[in-house]
Image (tube, rainbow, N blue to C red; front, top):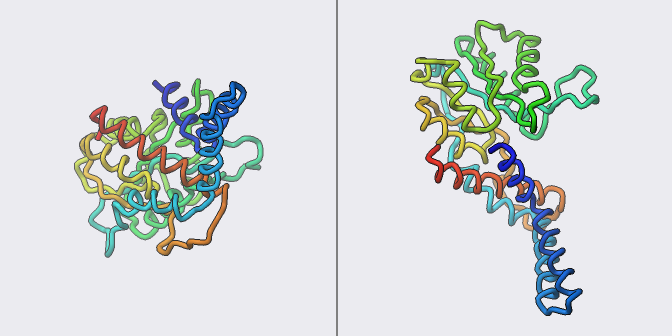
Length: 253
């Protein structure tokens, strides 16, 4: 199942899809088919459209705006559940420092909440999602960091075996036990929140969404163009819409 998920994720890369269409077009051109010209033109159009970032932001906005950050005092919550995906594995460049990826707000905002509300506990859920699971679980890196900044073992639990959102919800539920009925804040990226919140609620958690890592601006800048940013935004759009549909069909949401 993990291999299938990894293969699907790879194929849903926007540049990969464009390359597949272009490759088919070139092959058909070799056989002098008029469809070859059409496919090459489509690939070029998609490549250009990919770099126009307002288009991808408009596609991502419905996901990010599904939930808002809770307002007011949050003392009624027992703690926070943090989904892994923020910490990069140490590939030799870390020099003993924590390597944060694009979802680093999952770490920084969680730490802010823990410091503001000393009664809150934290559940950090994240294993090693690589094929073969030969690396270090992300939760191990998170535990080392949070201990270094003063979050003791009495306030934090770490789930180390999960490889996807469904396993995050189920395995951390087993770790927490009956306390899942207490009110918790669920911390993950805003675009990922619809799928994550639905999965945790279906698993029996009493969670309130606390989205972080927003990738879309409040105002669209129509002249913005970046192939790098556009490709990354479209990757997230495809991953989350396909992921939500897959989880819905599987009864996980």
